[in-house]
Amino acid sequence: MFRLLCIFGLALCVHSCLPPRLFAQVIEVGGGTSTLYQGSGGSIATHAQGYDLTLGAGTIDGHLIEGARLVKPTPHAKYILGDDQIGFQLPTDIFDAGHFLLVRGAGVAATRGKTDLLAFAGATATAYSNPLFIGAKTNELAGVFFLQTRLSSHLRLFSDTVAQKMMTEIEAIEWTPRPKLDLALSAGIGANQPYAASSLKFSRSWIDADAAYIEAGPQFQRVSLISPLQSEADRENVQVTVKPFSFLTLGGGRQNYLTPQQSSTTSLRSSIDQGSVGLRVFATQLNGTIFQSTFQSQSDDAGSLSASRDFTRRFRFAGDYLTSRPRNSAHTSSFISTLSEILTSRLSVNENVTYSGGHTGITFGGEILSNFVTVSANYDTFFVPANNNAFEQALVLDVKMNLFGRLTLHGGTYVDPTGHLRYTADANTVMWRGQNGQPAVKAIVMEPAIMRGCVVDTSGRPVEGAALRIDKRMVYTGSDGCFFLREHKPGTHPLQVVVAEFLASGKWHVVSAPSTIASKPDTGNAEPPIVVVVGR
Image 1 (cartoon, rainbow, N blue to C red):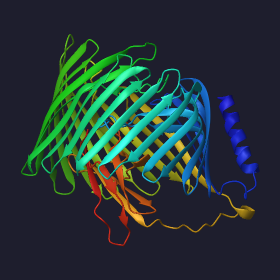
Image 2: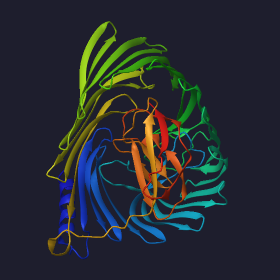
Image 3: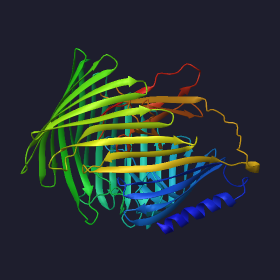
Image 4: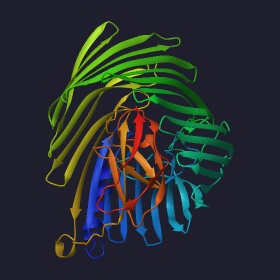
């Protein structure tokens, strides 16, 4: 801890000693601690005309790491020095679009005509990415070269190379013969292991279908990394949602995963099958889902039934019946009922009654929204196939406080993939510097092309903190479930929903989403946003 404090003290001294003309006009300072990420630390980010600089330091799993990142954009390219997180998405990644690798060195990203390229030279990194600070430990020398070219409005080619001791070279092609129909093929080697994948993504007003088949070597990894270890889709993967009527939704799917192990050269296979039905009758939403999961030698048959209804604009009732029948373990079942009441536009409360194993429990939650503080406390239920009792109920708490105008304190609890409750606490503030100590005043030119989108759940409620990748840029939805971007000229860009990066708690899957998003000239008449539907 003493070394960590010294690092931040030195960084603050550097920021304060550099002359305003040379250094940034806007400085953002943040830090915190998290058991979800097994880390604590913070960062100092400097934003100036012509460059962005970030310094970070902290501990992850008890190991001290530091990092720095300098980004300088130009009209034709973006130059990066230091630590960077590079997205590694293939067009066949329709079920797991959150792949990335951490690198340390120097790189450039540029667009030439219809070709996008990214080149990076340095080394891979061994530290986990986390929202508190940037940091890495140098691992192995590597060179990265990603190339994407648009042969036409319907056809794109990809070439992804990571040159290191265990080579990765994957080529891919994506064909969009008509709107909302995408076909893709990928093939090559990852960490010296063979890899091949094919995918189909199809969407119409009454059906959404995603299918992929992946064949990979038993020790396959997209890139040879110590961390982060990321699961890969494996073998057959299917997700189909059918909406024959406005009041009826049917769904089913199967997912297979290949998960690398920290101290082993082999990976573990797991799978989950599920089927669901949603029915809306007389303003009442009814849902039923069955699961069958396998993990190592464990298997579990589970199911859930739920009903919800709004009574006026103030009251909402929801009831859930959950059952889990793991092999070679005790069966469990529970019933949960929740009554929510909106007292004012800034205050809502809920009461939960749970009956399980012959015992009855009563819990309370709610949400307070104000300019000073926002508090949310809710009991949520999560499906955790790795546990004997597949359904876990936990208090999910989120608190945000705005102090002294620019200081924000935030804390929240989360449920990790193993079903354990974790927390994250952080603080953030923004300071201005300019000539003679005065805040810098800079004219801002609004870019003329605009794109909008919203993310909702299967009940039509907005999802805050949903993550989407537009080209190589990650965006997150606000409290209204929507995002907003501008760019220099109108264009069409590939859109991916990155459920692995959602800030909203729980395990999410994509129900329906467009494969592209287009920006339109900002004429003052707002274009209708694209809509993404996700399920928990």
